[in-house]
Length: 142
Image (tube, rainbow, N blue to C red; front, side):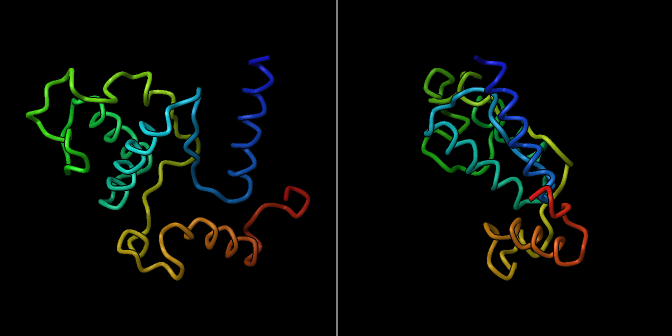
């Protein structure tokens, strides 16, 4: 039943937001691991350059589709690559990802890699600090 799985997916997203996540990137359908990895490498690159989460995801999608060129992360990330040779240019490979929540940018200390436990742990640190300061989710929501 697709409506049940969609409802569960949005409940999981809501749980992350309630727990203190600023935004959640979620997939509306199953995506290939390879195309998702390629997309997320580019998304994180744009986040580190100061883009908001939706801006970074959009720029990464445009780069995979061949409509925008940025830093070369793969051999085919070049304006000289023919469109037909771009491995993940079809929207089916990346268009299912959406951003839910606030349109936030990574703090400067995280973009520079100066978070106490590194960029990957920043979300957990932020959520923990909010709970300790009383700004986190109510106890019964955990």
